[in-house]
Amino acid sequence: MPRMLDVSDEVRSEIGDDEADRLLGGDRAPDSYECTSCRTPGDTHVEPTSTVLFVGEETAVLAFAHARCIPSQVVPVSEEQLVGAVRSISQSQSGAPDLAVPTASPAAPAPSPATPAGPAPTQPTAPGQAAILGITCGLVLHGKAGHASLVVEPTGPVGRPGSTSGEDEFLDLLQDAGFQPVTDLDETPEQLPGWSVLVAMGKLHAVLQPSATGGSTGWWQAHQPLQVTDAWRMAASQLSEVTMYAVPAGLVGRQPREDLLRQALERAVALGQVVAASLPLAGT
Image 1: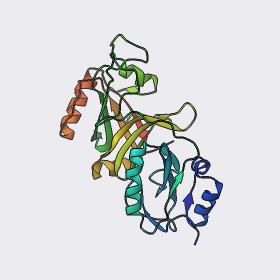
Image 2: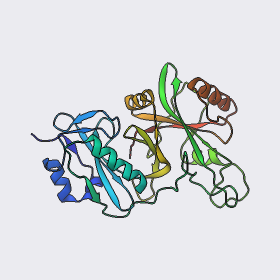
Image 3: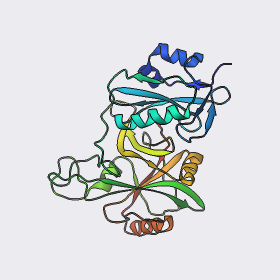
Image 4: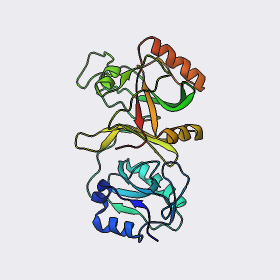
């Protein structure tokens, strides 16, 4: 029986035509799998399935996902994350062949790791001092519908590349990239083309932005993939998008409950200090 498998052009260019043809012919694809996005079972014989290639510095791992969850694509990750992906995929896809293959070309370097979040994609705000982005996951109501959301808040002022003034330009930088000021939390912001949120193996891996050379690259990447709640993941999967809010340092903080998170966001909105966009799940 033929498999309902999608191998995108970018995945094909990485693994080569021969390997792609073997996958499509069924020689290298499993009958069943655990979706690398929603972590529920899939069957390549009965439902459209995406090939997702996780690319590290030296190696790559091919995984499978429901086409309704994420499209076939190449996802750059750190080599450390790739080791965990190999272990998880090997455990979940019993009977599948060894899917680690060499990369066709070196992957773009990932941001330097930090805990719990990666560094801001800007210059340090002071000599020897880099702003760190904190990420809080939670459900934020837009009217009566709960939307999977990320609240991004740096630990200090974020300046433009080359700036030494110490002035905080974090929101200005994001508005330059297409994020819009928020005046009402009940309104869903518009989608931002080229940006996406990568959730794989039930965890938050990265926020991706458009690359100047095409495709996408990491804007923020978790040092270790962050666990999200089932409710958050289900909301993101149902809408195929995540709302990303961004605020300057010190306005929201780490709130232990979603009602407190919303209250803190509402205070920041009243001050005109929130920008946001809707980001597709792992879009390219």
